[in-house]
Length: 420
Image (cartoon, rainbow, N blue to C red; front, side):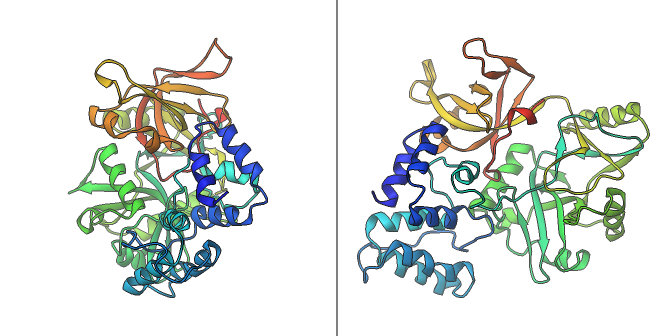
């Protein structure tokens, strides 16, 4: 079988178990493993936004294995700009049609077959580096007062890295938000070389953040490399932490260090709205204020919590509605006016212990464009009221699930234990 035929076979099934079976069958396929790594490695970027026009089989024949090694020069920035495009075109034209299509998918960083990083690492343990972030606990039962209370935003989570030359924001999936140099000048003034800040990418109109779908839509465009210069200029990074991989510095000291950097208002970076609360009552009042302002809720943080690349109990969420990131495993056709269009997405947790049909929250235009091929394997954010039992098969479900958005910045769905 060719690599493309295996990818097509993976894309033809919505079942995670079927995908795992196919990958297990191909576990000894070194070339497939190389293709998957070259595509999903979160720290690899080929710096080409659009595949150039080309004619396969035109040049001297080369192998897909050779071509993958060759485009490593793009990732290493050995060839850039027009030379980089010409280098890619040469490789595409030297491949047969099927292998050229695979190389396109690698450059686009998406095999379009619904295979997640979690599934890949289940077959080849540790093959894909996971871009870990410090995550909040699902409730505030482990918070000790006094504590920090911060606004809970609904932008695109990211790590902003300053290497002394350029500022890059990495999504939770390890992809770079392509925003040009909009953060470079401010990062040079405020950050130390090699420092990493944790926060959220938002987009503003004037001094006001855009609505969630509009802002995250632009964030998704930046991940795809299709954002315009004007749109990128509206990007703002809201920071709440300095990443401490030694896991030894308490949060009050990390946040104090951040505060020292913000001696004046900044246009491109903003310090997260923060207040010290002395009790549950004060925390609830802060939460209520945020809800009244149209925000999503609040986050509480212990003074002494240390940064760790996992879900920690020193940070807890306060939300009016619950939210889940689920993986789309199937697509159901609508009825009536939605005949031939999307009716509902069938979504699951990463451990398949919760499955739910989500048929509310889509606009008419979204029902038109959200085809089965488009949605399969993607992560979606769903709002719900509570977790319920499904008497039919014993698998958990959600009460009143509503679609919010696709999260191409994420590669991993929540597990049942992460939901509230």
